[in-house]
Length: 293
Image 1: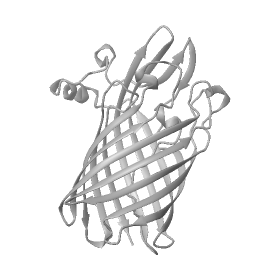
Image 2: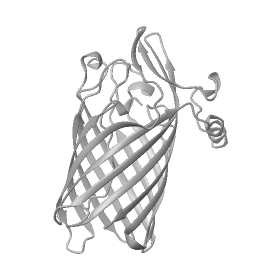
Image 3: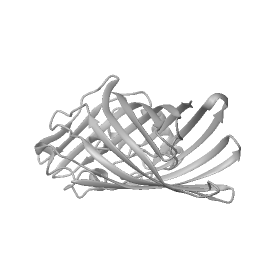
């Protein structure tokens, strides 16, 4: 929730969709979130479950250029997975982040500094979170199509506010790469985004953000692949000197993707925060489907 006050990067392949082709993507991400940190200067309490529903449409203007738009819906509530996550962490001997000190099934999105409320977000029921407009331009593609490099620009228009300070539109620019190495594929992303802050949030948020991703894909057949992805994002919140509030966001994603006839593509992934002492989501189960014409 702290990172989503601004533009969060969207990871995708370097290749545009192709001239005259239309692709629609529907993506669901269900997250369990718990972060609690209290010191003499601040108090952070994030305890919720969130469903993100994203619909993306893109069109290939030519072989090198695609344009598109994405609408993101957000649903937040107290949830039902707290006991499951607690057991999962214990089985794997992972940190439990003081979960035992708070009741299960609770809800909160609050951040206070020096007794002043700086973030307070209520539950939302399938509300439009933001709209994004983007374009991707292919800079290079190998003669054997074994590699690709592209640049992607995106503008985010927020539609939800927290009750302390309004969110503003931001823009981002990223470089996307793909390289085939024997039976493997290497994917990468490097980018930056503006953070346009409301006056109420000016001393709380950084003025820009940076992010990077590296991923490996292992095809097991012509239509089925396994994926491992590692992402890092620079802090958005500043001035707390506490990793759970203003540390780097680091996540690892495991997943599979496969294609079926008629232009359908499917994906299932699992995201875990690594390490847990960061402002990262505890875990996210993600499912996506796309269709190309």
